[in-house]
Length: 363
Image (cartoon, rainbow, N blue to C red):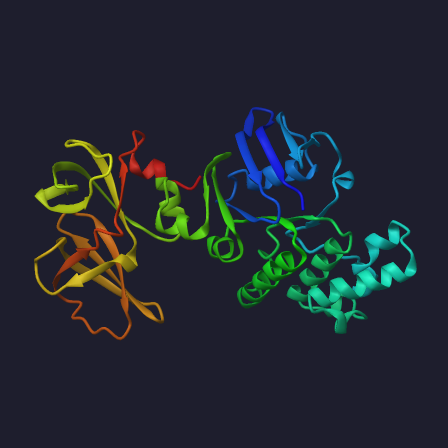
């Protein structure tokens, strides 16, 4: 199982910088997802890691060996593309066994490998069908089988599910992780779908504007993102700008417009610090009274989201927040409410010098 490293990778296309000083290590047997908005550089990065493109600067190492400049066909990897690529004149079996066949492997080995990979992706019964006879999900499974048949220990997945319907994507993402873990592969999976990345990966890398913002386990990125952009891009968050008014016994009191305050943890905060408070919709609640960590507001609307109901509330600080409540909870939406903030789940960030909207902007 290979360990893959990118050291100081840069990529320029004329005057346009697609990647800037990217350092990344993918451990043996790790399923790594690279997540980010369109145009952030994630596909450029994996094309350099796989050898399809050469970096403008920096090195790529596999198991300590410098492979910068080594072409993709000599890197011992399997590649699954965003657009499903199968030979239309070949059935599933011939597509899956094309790699061993073109390498002139012995017929018994080709038979064994073909059965193994098609069983892994649950496509053995469809081995006689042609791509035109398959659904999109089945075609992508056949493409995965073909990538696995080369017996490479590194699997590159470039937006492999983005062309598929929602229900098919949900089913296939778990099949991908199962196959990778069953075979003990190292996998690098690029996607712009945060739910996809969080559900399949051991670790998620978040990218923005050609740079790696942060990397961590999915739970940590969701619950304790270190960067404001990650807090906004992974899941949803409400953001309020204020400043630290006072610190008492390990707690900081952040003051917002119109004098309203919230209590937050005082780690590394000083009186007068300009800050941004982030609170996810599910961590907010409607309080019965004005006691506790609350800010008053007025309900502006409600949306039914299935298992939850989303309230849109304009706080008396003039900030608009979303609150997710159980759908079964009845509430008079034509009134003022007290919005309760759970201080254990609220996150606090230094206010960015470029402004909050610029720090959160996807492009």
